[in-house]
Image 1: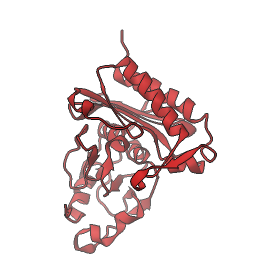
Image 2: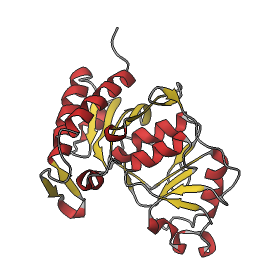
Image 3: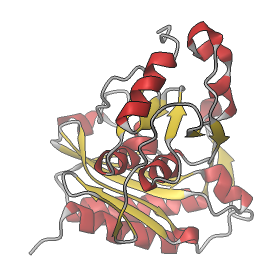
Length: 262
């Protein structure tokens, strides 16, 4: 019997971890991408090659979207697409931190159906398939359900708390935390360790696709910054920021955010 897409993603993520940990982040060859898009290392490229060969080799009819592969319009004609970030949190990888992840997902007609976020140095593998729940290292996880904003824990970068982003320039009083990997932030909310995550900048699909399903299956809502549903495999593979939290807290945060000027 052929492996399910989730089985395939789990095996590929573990193989990616073996490749990535074969490099030392601080000593790996690195380059800066054009247009200030951040750094890339030889480890990112090696993982990208492995994942593309392994995943599309098993599913040749699926499209491919990866941070480290030049994009083509071919994926737009495919019913199913792999959406991959070989190393989410490359700067953390370079710094020798453990908070970087492999983010792998399958989108079908714009919706994520299978997802894995794997942190090799923490031995944390988050996984989900549509309608089947979310898991961390094989054990079910569930998002927290705080009553309101006050005292809730938020994963977000410092610019999110600029008063300009909030109605009446009133920033909610929340316990502030941060992790560099967007995929890890989403997964931590799914795990229930934090109550919400928010990024207001346009977000690349490969950073959030896997985490979005894991959160959904853990009982949270994941939308763009305005509260609109996320859709994937867009011609330009970005979404308008990301807000993730349990339904009650999610609604409260949407109401408090200033209208998006775009």
